[in-house]
Amino acid sequence: MDTHFDQLLDFPCFQTFKVMGVAHERLPDDVIGCLQNHAPGDYNPTVKPSPKGNYHSVSVSVRVTSKEHMELIYTELANLELVRVVL
Image 1 (cartoon, rainbow, N blue to C red):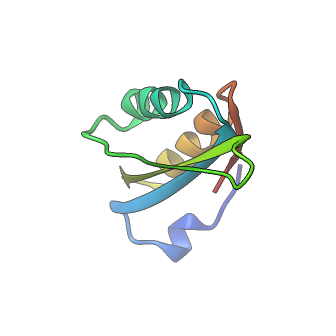
Image 2 (image 1 turned 90 degrees about the horizontal axis):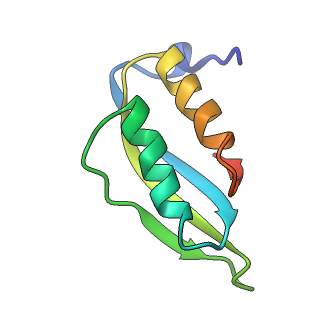
C-alpha cells in the first residue's frame, strides 16, 4: 500500500477507522483485538447495523503515529475474517 497519508496528515494524530463487516457479535471484539495488537489503547467503538441488519459498521478513533502505522492498521483490519470494507 502506498498512500499519501504523510502529505495529508500531521502525525501523530487520531484517525477514525470505519470497519464494515458481517453482522456477527464477534465483529467489534475482533476489530478491537486487532487494534490492541497494533495501537494499544482504551477503545469505545460505535456499532451501527445496516438497514437490513446483514452488516454492521464499527467506528473507532485510533491514535496513529506514522503513514506506515496507519497503512498497517488498514491492512490488518481488512484481513479480519468478518470484515468486508475498511474506510
